[in-house]
Length: 420
Image 1 (spheres, one colour):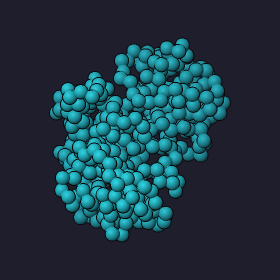
Image 2: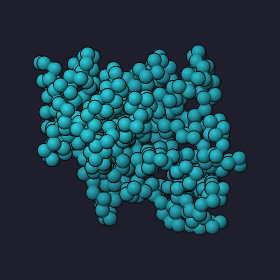
Image 3: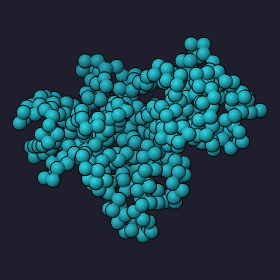
Image 4: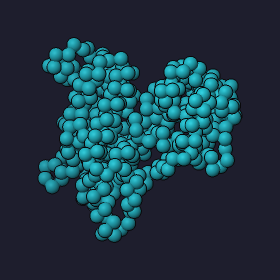
């Protein structure tokens, strides 16, 4: 089979796939190809390939010239001048969708050059499981427009399971059962569509291993056992401190420096396996010195890797991922804590403007737990001079005003079903 036939094979394959729709703004991606290169990034197996194929099918229906190629194909990624050969095959007009472009050496220079020469004629859309695509080096700065996608939201999960959201007892029961599965096995599309629970765990473990080996270890050039140990530490620890992590490594006999651990933290984020959010502070020194809160790229890893069913941590992680889907590009997620130990799980800020404060809890049957969550939110609201906050719970739903702060209690499942 010649090279052009291999390109054609991928385009034919993409057009023929039967795929579930995602809650993605396709029109925005297509519209922005006029001046930019839309770059779809996200954790491995979260649905980037399906998204590109859905885009191809949509463009094909509009009778646009469109081609799709997966550059992780072993027949292609090691070939010399493969990207130039794609242009020879496809031409200089139309929509060209290049999946996992970071698998090809020299991709940054090629993208910058091709976009400069063919902007407005050839509309390129690219994807990668590495965040480096959305934060490229100098030649591509200003040209890339990132679109981050994540495993299925709860609403997408219900759609994949053909469960309609209706205000009936039967529908509510189905939603609640689905919510339990969503907590335990997460939202990866393939895992969601897999019926057998043992197979779900097996697939999740494969994903986890692949991300560590193919993304983090490869990017960092570090030993896989070191990367696995770091990941195990973060999974076990709601807070990440490089100093404490260093002590953990030393207790296991590893010879590693603090700087290397900080680099590993960055590589984990680049692969979307973990996220680390800073404490809210106007003081830059505080933001760098205080521990960061850690979240995993899919809640299913808690159960598949650790057999862990810590509902409180899973709820908080679900909320974090949903916030990542909902926040605008210029907004940031932090946590808040004062010197008295009062804490609020999430602050959404835009510059110095506080948009929302959110607390997450599953254990408010105990009075001291409920008081702790309320006190943390009220203290945060007062310090930041805002008059309302949200506490996401397992079942409680009501509104209370405490010390002139309006607190909305809402079940987490209902909040996940709200529109952005």
